[in-house]
Image (cartoon, rainbow, N blue to C red; front, side, top):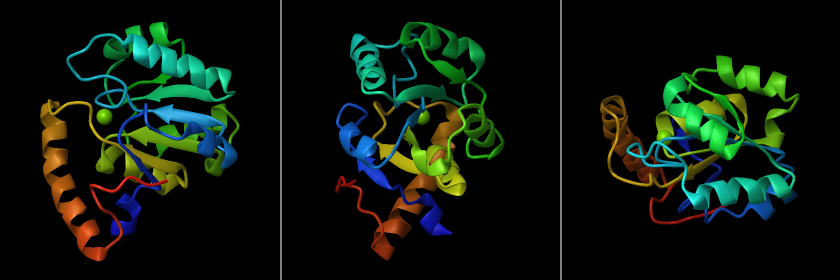
Length: 174
Ligand SMILES: [Mg+2]
């Protein structure tokens, strides 16, 4: 079971990811998490840097979407400013909305990558669907109350993965 929490790729941030390598790997659709992946939870809109990145990725030929467990209201400004489709209240890691997205964009899971900052939602959800899972460090330490609980569980998971030799928190790869 612990294997389901191991990300395929681990990067410092969305800005450090090797998107060319993802392209070579056959990835066509990028599913971005919102909170603490694209923006800190205290920010109500995307930074110029985030807007530029999404534009660059579109120019590279990627389809980019936002998939977040946050509500529609929080997501709206990001959807408009980044000009991307959004799946709010996604209930990650549950498979329903991943399935919907794959169907809607007509993609096989191996052509899709999901990028996020949480093992229990973003990474587990992607791994359960056979989607390429990419972990990034959270932008800041501030989390929603529910996420704080997840972070406690995450600590246990990270420790187990480290013990098993399948993941190292200070070693980026992929
Ligand atoms: Mg997040």
